[in-house]
Image (cartoon, rainbow, N blue to C red; front, side, top):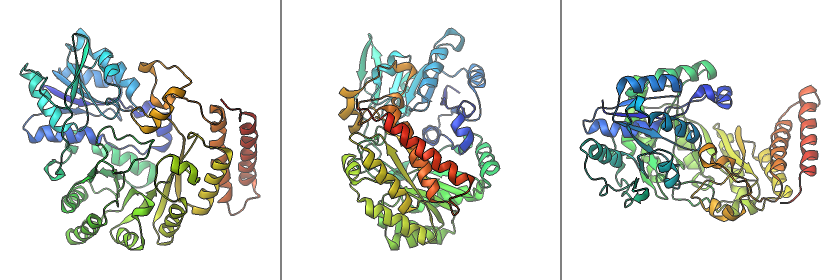
Length: 459
């Protein structure tokens, strides 16, 4: 076969994920692979998740593809660049390297000068199909929308690709191209149940300043409910997963669609327990009831902060009290909850962090994630802090996660702030707060507060 799809995420190199062990297949790559397959273009997919670069390179050497399409994002960028440099040698016969994914949109020149022959910007299915044909037939690429390449050492970026309006035209992802059993077994062995992913929509209509819309844009396009349910039924019959994770940004954004989805699941007898992400204002008692009836066992409801001031600075357009209420109402109906919080957002103070702790204690989500805010290139947040970046980074060996900027307090302060949040919330949930575990958490919280005080210096 002349075209190969791959990525550069290696689970064995990720200590954090090795503790969590909740890997999912590269759904975006499988969608593009499936689209080319629907056009009668045979292709290979080398999934690196459970493999390593040595085995990956051996596979490429055996297949000798003329075109290698690599997915890149914040997590995999550094490894992707290493892989490109190896592939652009005589050993691998100098294949044409095509990169796609969210990280390429606002790093066009950098990726091209790092070794990519072409970049696919935005949705990849139609663009990759047209680009592959042009490469194989040695024809002009200037008329292909949605790509970038170098010509005489100058960046050529063509007109943006029109996004799919009707997602019912999209073939299903080519899941058969990889070993899904490895994912199912990993989940089962580590968590007692297996899980798979489904995408029902593309784009997000909201304007959160820290969130990237580099691939699907600020839009809302949805697959017909009956097609999503047909996919669920197929997965149920073929792979029998214990759970589904809907990867959409706001699963309940359309109540009309959700009502149709509910009806189709009942009609097609396709119930699989699932979890999803949404926003508090897109939930109510009726929507919660519908979700519970069709197997929803966990809802992630974003807030990002317990301080309304910070939420407003993020342009989240949500009331923290309503977020708290919806988490509580979701818990009350018997559905687990999750929420996301970050510290270190511009203008955040100690008082704002204390409000986040109070929010987590009162809302009582089943789970939550916490991170130190970082600016992704192309987002409104990045534009706001661009002139306040304090560390000069080598682009090829760093990611946007490594960017630091002038915040209210020093970087170290926020490291200890995370520790304080985690230990304060954990302590509040203990039934017996005066045993060894409770005392240990309280001491860690007090120490974190002390180190926050020491490192509270302003920039």
